[in-house]
Image (tube, rainbow, N blue to C red; front, top):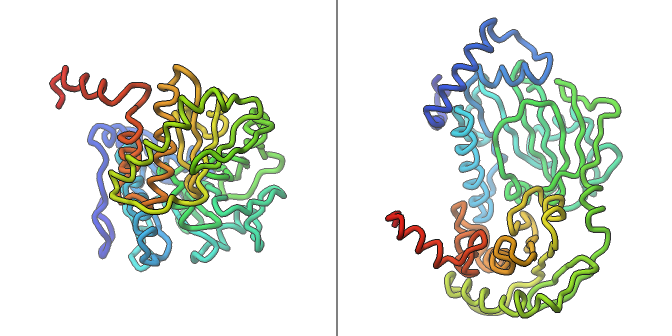
Length: 369
């Protein structure tokens, strides 16, 4: 399928995945695309039959941070297309739309079309932020993602990413694959807080609201915060900080110095840095949605880190979380995905529980470098 005139060529996913998607589309489309969707399965069929999606970027303000964020979104779009065997077009406001493609829309309150989309979802806006199911989402990094039938393209899914702050939203998105299940999720700091089932047209279903944040908070009912070096460190109330000072916190200055050496930065340390320490994997998973040894906050100079002896290298990998916070505060958003993690891992000297020297020796033994 050709892209409409005046747009950049769509990117093709891997041949194997594309072949599977084409086979599914052929089977599912035996009766053709029959107008408006009746349910999420019809939206899925419409997506496969279209074979492509477009990512609609908000107006561009030309700042360095926004350019880096947009480059991040373009990479996510291409990765999603490759995984699902679809074509993808990243479209800016002045460029022609592809009416036959599924849409992924990204924006904030100032983005054209935001008001109409929020009204369809039953989301209210006020000066503090937005309201869903009588709950206020007012933080800068609060956002929502919803999927329903595109009112402008019957039979195709529309995935909406909306946030209180556009830059924080763009930084927090980790997957731009188009959805197909009619649902709305509210996110706080990139983490699911609330989920609402939708009709295929986007209206909230009566009584179909699930609280996803309360279990996370129950896993850590109380905490305390202490200033350690350059960081405000939040730990569970019963966490033994003294036991970790020599094994972790006292080692951070040397790690941060290696970051500065790599970046060629110097001067006063960045301000308002924070670490949130987790003493168990279950608590970490509830807090971040994953079991990686650290996770960078998408909107603030902060990270969640896991400090458990003999797990993920214990103190080793967690040092990379502090290094990533420091590096981003020093140099801003990276221009390529993975650069920030690379700098942090190099400074910490560990990756997934093993010293980097062991990884290099393993690669050399296998003639891989």
